[in-house]
Length: 356
Ligand code: ATP
Picture 1: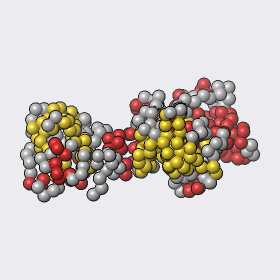
Picture 2: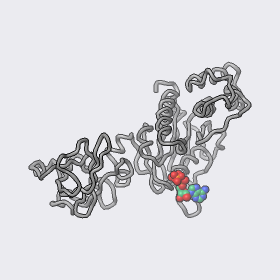
Picture 3: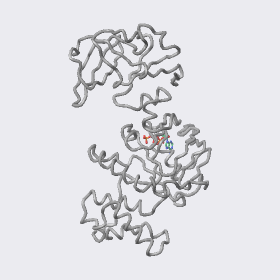
Picture 4: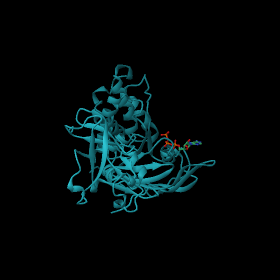
């Protein structure tokens, strides 16, 4: 991150209260967000929440119905895509089969009018970064699939754009390759220090890639923060439920012996990994350190490094994820679930979190 690009304010992207309507449909609703120079920002949300439309407005492929977009201090709301100095990364890439790797890397530079030394420098830098510098004289047909993909990525990088824009670029890779490519992408972005906006509906992908995650739902920005912030301190029920696998458990205060202990909460949330399982009620609950619930174990699932247990608590299903299997718990047995007070999230009628 010490890279000069990383602190360059001209690589910040400001979305100033942008709204996008398609006829009656509000795809993006009054979105106000700054993407900081050099950061890896992930736009995360379910299908149809407006993330691609947001990315397309940054790219210049859609024009906002309201609001403005700035890159650095330059207003670009209606600027043509090719005049924004951004680079959109696509899922699949085509290479010129008759050109060498060097020729393929040089091609996107044609329009930039660089002198020969600068062109040479950029090609070398890109090739070294992607570890394809000993393949510069080869043709695409002589390369492996992975090498070809690197050359294609190199064509995006060699332009040294202000920012990379990526819309689910890994979605057509199989699970294993996706995880591998994901970590390569992250390390590449860190070396380059280039501002990156990345769209995905996959919360795990978002958690592993992002400096900050912007969670969207129904066209509206819900929360922006580091992966840790949005996971540990979700501002509303939507964010709480969208991040985390298995998902947070949601319960009604009425399901506890003393519903009044949650004050104004309509819903109580607790993550599976925070649920503790005891054989019987303990005095600790009385001290206010734990909330307790009685449950019957339905399924005990070993996961290799953990156990996931589904409980039925008065008709509601509660998932616990435990490092070790409690010896006495198997399907059909009853147990006391203990929820540590500090791990319990309380949500009001409007779904917003209730502060301490
Ligand atoms: P996905 O992950 O499924 O791509 P998304 O979060 O990226 O979803 P968008 O593609 O931004 O969502 O779409 C947001 C809403 O806007 C959706 O209801 C979609 O149907 C609608 N929409 C997007 N583009 C257009 C268009 N060109 N014309 C009309 N409606 C559109």
